[in-house]
Amino acid sequence: MTDAQGGERRSFVTVEIGEQLFGIAIGRVREVFAPERLTRVPLSAREIAGVLNLRGRIVTAIDMRSRLGMAPAPAGSKNMAIGVDHRGEAFALLVDRPGDVVDLDVAGLEPAPATLDRRWASLVEGVFRLDDRLLLILDVDRALAASAEPVAA
Image (cartoon, rainbow, N blue to C red; front, side, top):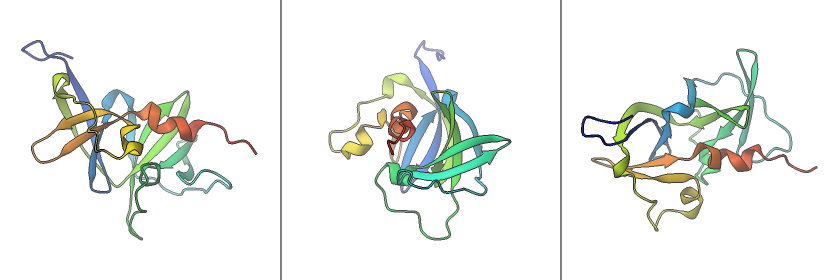
């Protein structure tokens, strides 16, 4: 998409994970929903929160706090899920809060700062400076790559 001045623009769904604002390319988001019952998967990676049934489709739920090396959410807090696909499989990225859709000029995308935690830096495309905070653009494929790999028994 281009704006009136010919600059390229991209739209992102914003989400909060911990106190950090992340953006997910809108083209990657299938839906935003409140996850119902999660079923734990024995011997799965720590970041796999479980699986859920979403309208007859089995979806793997990824705890994004765990994936990013953050502390668990406070007890009793309700999270939301961002439905995405990766390599033909359905995933739900568990986040603290979904936000708005933002439309940003691609020229404003900067590389991740050198001071950003390396785990986070490996999962983001770059950052946008907003008025009061940084918006880290999550690379969904990189964020799910480790979670989607089969685990040897």
